[in-house]
Structure formats: structure tokens, C-alpha cells
Image (cartoon, rainbow, N blue to C red; front, top):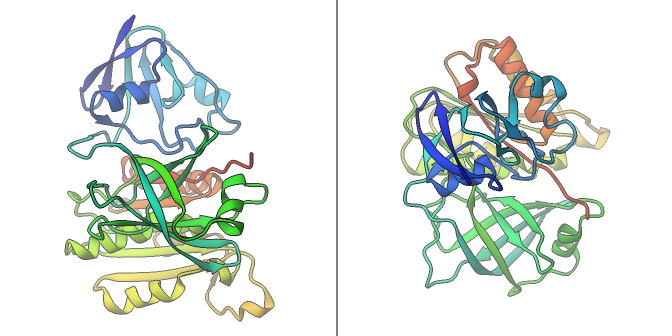
Length: 338
């Protein structure tokens, strides 16, 4: 049985089966709702059910509180319809002509950027054209049926390969393989492009980019793409890490500041060590943004990093800095250690 789902404020409509999540049904209908992990963890797909009832599905602790459920919120990557629905979802776009594909790729290079960060470059099949938007991610498809998601760190115009920034997670099966046994010419399979986190090129608002750790990867793609298309909007990058080694491409960001008109770079460390010899900003990265930009009402924010950072930034920017909720675009990194 299929139910009819209507989107507000855009007015789009699509059908969903009872065993189909709202997000999957929207994607099947060519509508790109905001989403990230598709695993009920990051909260990027959170929206309000205005009319009708849903089965909330399994969600990870902290991603949807009881108070939010009581207020009508749901995670569209997990919720399935129990009736016709009217839901509120902002920043909805059309998928357009960029298809999601499953493709093989070959490991072309591995570069240790920090003790716990590996830059992985994979070569794409010459016979396949792979399109994506700056900021999106791919899922590696593992032999046991599991998936591991990584943001694409290069801009779309750099065809033929993908650059990925892999952080080693203690106990992480795939990331341990990347650091300990993966080698050039290994073959992997992936699905993509995925995600609703990408540069909105039709806006004129100044851009604030907030990266935590390897959340720098999709931010890097957005900056390089913006430069490639000649985007003239002012851009400010805040990159937060615990220690100096976490700013594993600090030199590149400083080069951008020297070379790109209207671009500023502010690195922020939260747990400096004596050997960091750090004389820059300290503290939490989102608090540095608020100190510099107490009024974000005319800006657009792109944030990527750990869920705690994303949620803290979202709440603070909207409640204390007058950022419109539609102007906060985020990709929240979650990890699996199985």
C-alpha cells in the first residue's frame, strides 16, 4: 500500500510504500531532502511531521529526543509512513541529472597526512563518467555487506579520481585496513554520490565554513569548486582540531588565504600541547565563529564534523546569532567500530 506525502513549504508530492523510509521514497521520486548518514545517527534529515502518523524506526541515542518526538519531529532516513503525510522539510532540491552509481575503483595513492589521517586517492573507471556536487560523499561497499561513508575532498572538475580523507578509528575494521594493509592498485567498490550537503550556487550570502577534524574534506571540495567557477561571495573557513597535527592541511588553507580574493582562514585548537607552539585561536571552533560573527542573519553556514560539534553549532548559530535555520547546511560524521 502506498501513502501520499506532501512537502512544506515547497509543495512537492511523492508516494511512499509502508516499508519504505520517507527519505528513500523522496530520493526515488527525484527529490533530494537533506540527509547524511542514513543510519539514524547524524540528525541531518530531521524534520517535522505536520499531519499524519509515522513509524519512527530505529534511531541512535541522542539523534532524536523524546521531546522532539512530542514536538512532531522525525528522522526521515528511518521513519516510514503509517498514513498520508504532510511533512516540513527545507532545502529540498531536485536530484537532477546526476545519477547514483555503483562502481569499482582502484587505489592510486596513499599518503599519511597525520598519525591518524590517511589521504586515499582512488582512480575511477575510464569508461564511466562519475558526476557529483562539491560536498557530497560516497559509500564503500564491503564484502560483508556493510558500508563505510567518506566525503569527497576534491572538486567535481577534477575528473577521473576521488580524494578521501580517512581518520583511523580505534577498533574500526575498515580504517584499520586502510592504515595497515591497504596498498596501491587494490580494487574497491563504492556507491555515490550521496548526501544533501553541497554548495548552493544560487545564493549571494557570504559563506562561513566550519570544519572539525576530517570534516575538512568536503569543505575543501566546496572551496576548490567555488574558486573554479569564479564564485565572488566572501568565504571564511574556521577549522577546529584538538592539536596542531589535526590541522593536517594547514599549509593548503593558508595558501588559499593568500591566493583567493575574499577568503579568510581561522584555525582553532581546543587541546593544545606544549610542543604545538601555538599562538593562534583556542577553544571550540563554533564559539570562535560566534565571537567573530555575533550576527549571522545574512550568512550561509556549511558545517562538517562530529555530531556534537554540528548540534552545538546549529543550536548556537540559530538561537544566539540569528542564523535562519534554512541557512545552516551540515554533514555530521558518525563512526562504526564494528
